[in-house]
Amino acid sequence: MEPWGIVFFQDADGTIPGDEFMTSCPDRVEAKIVAVLDAVAAAPPPSFSGGGFWEAMHGDMGGMYEIRVPGPRRNLYRLFCILDRHPPGLDGSVVAVITGMVKRERTTFTSREYRTVKKLGDAYLASAPRSIAT
Image 1 (cartoon, one colour):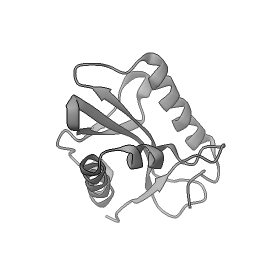
Image 2 (cartoon, one colour):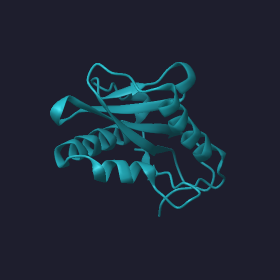
Image 3 (cartoon, one colour):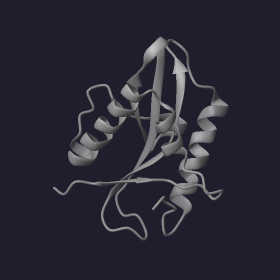
Image 4 (tube, one colour):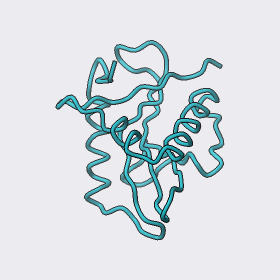
């Protein structure tokens, strides 16, 4: 099987939320996120087991995936992605990086925070060709 590409969603306002999140992470956390992202794309995703670092989301967030990386000071870093098998305007399947968030251990994101992530993911899927950073 061919490896999947990795793309970063670019919002209508020109921001690249996933890239902005990753560059805000501590270096060690960013390196781990990149390693997981590369492993997922190379596997390719349908056959990547995840090892606890790559998880399918459920409920209202169904269709999205997250990379989960622990960081310093009991923070947990989450990068939200979409598997896009036939993206308009792109050649081949891609892992689309949408955005990321940080939370403390033993806490949950709010419904509002998840809605923001979902809204960005929906904007990515509604774009044709896909709105990605180049």
